[in-house]
Length: 229
Image 1: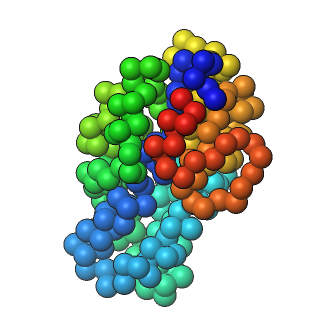
Image 2: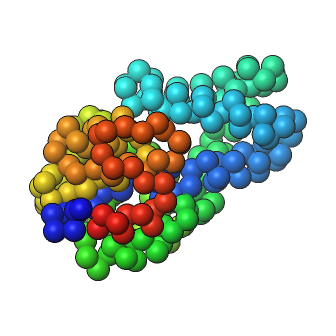
């Protein structure tokens, strides 16, 4: 479908290549245990996962700062679980979470295989809303950093997906045009609609069991990219 059109392939990182939920769960398992926080991990994650997605949405929309995101997503969970935790402990957990998160390196199935398949044929890049210092460590520790020509993050761009400026910066850095570019990501709002608004081709990696839509083709396994490229 895109084989004779696309020259540059842009990936989101979290929830698309890097298995955020799995690595995040392992990080919490470590830091909650080490800080003697006696909450059941499945109960904690049941509240944290949707809360984190909600706070990231607010962060994308510019409604909260990075610092508020990191604090509130934990404060909200402990409050909902009725587990009293001081602000000092919350700030400590927040720092430890960021420090340890990138040490876990689980990728989605077929990530390395599809990158090896694509690399000889296309130039590969990353566009991420994640924090620069954390995202670079994730890529390096997972041993996929070398696949990508350009790595564009929201701190570098000064805006977050779906703001068109981050996609325009990505095109500028990659020295390419939207009609030659494909964006692959898990977020309909941030990745797909954001990239389409600038003129990218798009492919939705459905990591969250989102409902079917007509904006672009949807895949459930990265290996399905071979059908299109």
